[in-house]
Image (cartoon, rainbow, N blue to C red; front, side, top):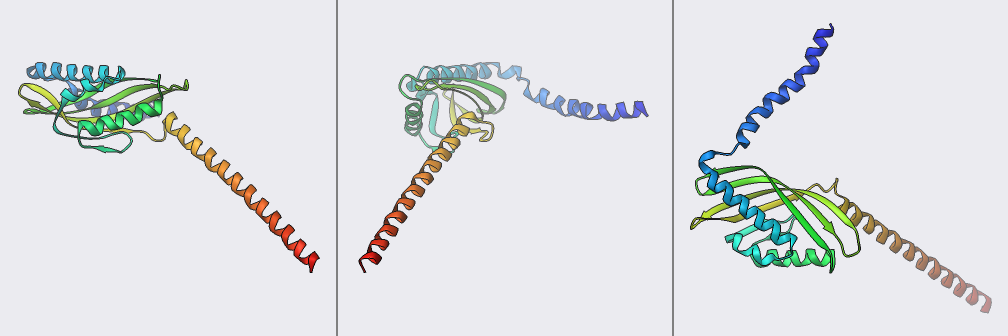
Length: 208
């Protein structure tokens, strides 16, 4: 009986190991594409440095013609100019003197000729001008294309967990506070209006 229970308990571990084995093989880099992997790593490093140093102009040469993307906010961008506008709004929210740092981790890249499909996640740290700090992890998928010997970003899409996210929690709580304060103010104004109407009616009755 005891050995049977041990075997049952070991089954999920064995199944997990079996399922993860082909994934590990798939994630291994193809030696014949070593130069392409290096080029994409350089692209990733340039992107990290550009955003962390707030020098967005360094990102522009990385984008292919017809570049599009979806930001973690759900906003769609269709050009470098759209990306720049999004970035400016983001920096304004952080505030003057605030800092942003990003680390891009690639889990896997698959090549289809001169097209690459990569996925992974980012580790982002936001220091606001107000002195608050947020740690955010976002998932991303990117399509790259080799143009004239250089890899360019064609499409990128990011997603963030809206539940396990302190920045989103604070915005929600702030919204609740605003609505709560608005409700209290509205209640006070209605009570005040009621008192004024009641006094006015009593005066009319007294006068009559």
